[in-house]
Image (cartoon, rainbow, N blue to C red; front, side, top):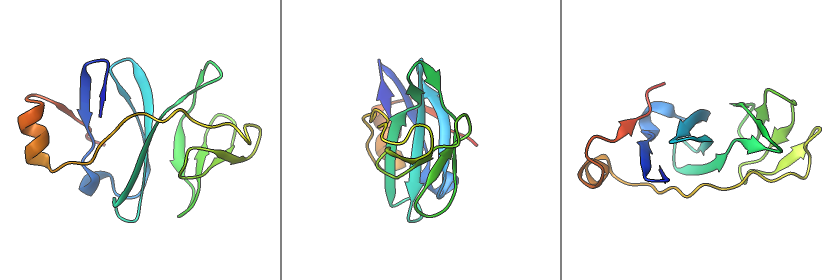
Length: 112
């Protein structure tokens, strides 16, 4: 993932199916993963001036700790106080580790 000339890699084999709360540069982000890392979506955690922290509830939903709202894989709150709110998608891409290492020498690698 690259934001404002800052880059960070999230090894899917390490993070598994989860909600990964992190930052890339100064942007608070969350990475939702499913299907053993075959499905990945990244979003900004900033909502209405607040920074949310997410955890995985089950195969289909993620929960933010601050409001208890339930979010789907598309970044849409489907239940709770924030129902109807959409997280802003962050540009990301999947790549083999060696292409990331060549493209971004010295890249920061997320380590849970």
